[in-house]
Image 1: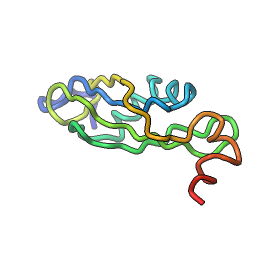
Image 2: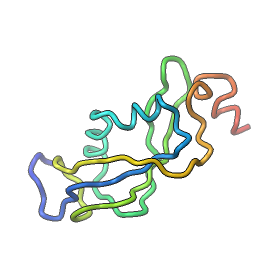
Image 3: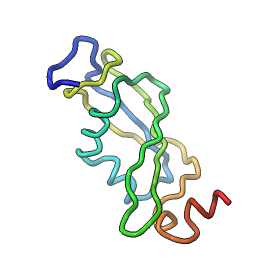
Length: 112
């Protein structure tokens, strides 16, 4: 993807994350660097798309993958360098975040 804007590009994409995402997870998702990551790694966005995105491991833990859902797209489906990302909160989904990601009782224990 180049730096130029495409005529079929989305001007704004609203993406939701679950209400039970930890404060740390929310800070990671809402960072400008994460928005830039989405611009570089996603080619298109359509309402209803579900993206499982790795957001980090914190200081000492297991990985945290967050289910992001595309709620609204303004403009076309293509994502380019000018596409803006906004975030909103949706219903909880049982995500294992916060200190559980960084403890023995975290996501890997829940999968057993």
